[in-house]
Length: 185
Image 1 (cartoon, helix red, strand yellow):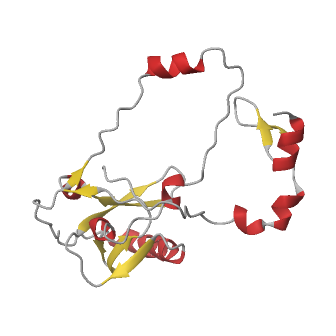
Image 2: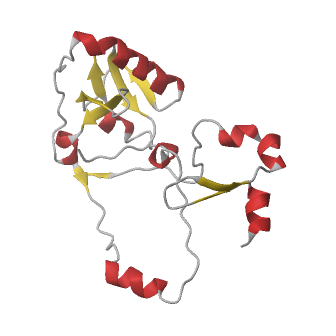
Image 3: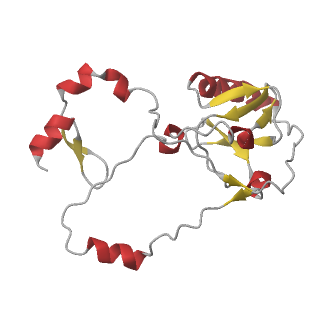
């Protein structure tokens, strides 16, 4: 994996502070511009968490947001709708509240309080490797790379049977996520 591969893929080399050291552009980026715009979507997998059906679904009442934030929340909801991340629904057995946080940049982050839903989700029990196990696997390695998918979890579709778990109420109505979401808050 040398400079020829970086040139073919159109990657950039950056230093430890993130400043570009060397940037390469490739013709295939111009030939397939749709690959580099918006969010991707995984087609071979749909996320479907296991649910304890003995837990009674809960519909939470609307938690009103401050009037000063409503316009920004409405704009963010519209962006999420147009990106296909959320979809409007008329009713859902689970309805959670919206939580609005302000980013460092001043933009709004729309979150959903899924703590009540978490009680019904059966967590995966796959044993994650420890630091020692990972370090042993990397022994002798000299080349490391990092692949950072932009908003990677939003590129995984949520199974239709699981979408109602993510329903949330706003001043604009009830919506649910169509892409995977983190079920922990």
